[in-house]
Image 1 (cartoon, rainbow, N blue to C red):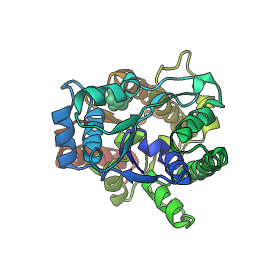
Image 2: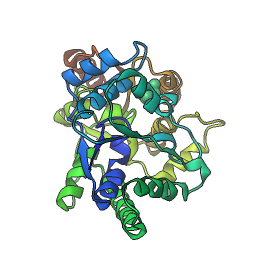
Image 3: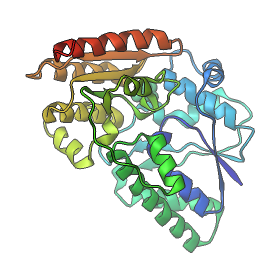
Image 4: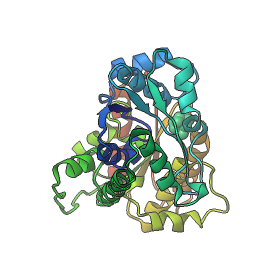
Length: 325
Ligand code: SF4
C-alpha cells in the first residue's frame, strides 16, 4: 500500500508527523517531487483561475502523484492550535481537487479540528490507522512514534534549521552543527511555510539572502509560548492560523530588536494576506526604530531576476542605514 503526500501546503508543517505514522502502520509513503515549472503549469491547467499560486501548485503535486499511489492523503485541516482556523482554501481543498482532477485514487480527507480538544489529534490518527489495520497496539505505537518525531522536528526548527534541513537531520539521525551567528545584517523573512520554504515558489529567496551573508529568521524559529505572548498584544487577532503566526512573529522580532529589516513574502490573490501584509507593514512603520519593510509578491509568473533586484536594493538600503556603505 502506498500513500501519496503532496510536497506543499501543510507538508512543511506536518510531514514529520505523517511520515512515521504511516510507516508505523506498514504503509509506504510517496512524496511528490520538489516544485518545478512543469508541476506548476499542470496545476495552473487543473485549477480555477482565481486561486492563489500555492493552491495551483498543490493541484500540480496531486496530478504528479495520482498514478503512483493507492491513496492520497489530503486531510481537511480546520484548526491546528485549537483556536484559529486555517484559510478557507485549506478547508475546501479535498473538494476542489476532486472537482478539478479526474482519475484520482481514494482520498483520505479526514477532518482535523483541534477546537474539539487536544485529544482530537489522537482520535484523528486512530481513525486513519483503522483504515489500514485492526491491530490497536500497532496504531498506538505508530501514533507515539509520530508524536515523538514531530516534537523533535519542532525543536530543530527552533534551532534555526529550515524544514528541509530538519528533515535531513531526522532521516540521518545527525544533530545539527551549531555555529555562531556573525552576520552583520539579520532579516526577518515572514510568510507561510509553503511559500517561504518552497524554493521554486520563493525563487530561492532564503538561499539568496544567505549567499549575501545575511542571517535570516522566520516564524518557525519563534517558540510557541512567545507567539502566545505576542497574541495578547493585539486587541483582536486574525481568524487564520498561519496569518496570525506571521503577525505575532513580526511583533516578536521587533520587540526583541533582533532584526534590521522585515521581508513579507505573500502570494498574489491571497485573501488573508490583504490583512496580514498591512498589519506587518504597520508594525514595522510605527516601531520606534522604523524598521525597513519589503513586500515580495509571488505568482506563477514571478521571475528570479525581478525578486533579486528588489531584494538587493532593500539590502543596500539597510547597509546604508547601518553606515556600512
Ligand atoms: S492563506 Fe493565502 S496563500 Fe495560503 S492558501 Fe489561503 S489564499 Fe492561498
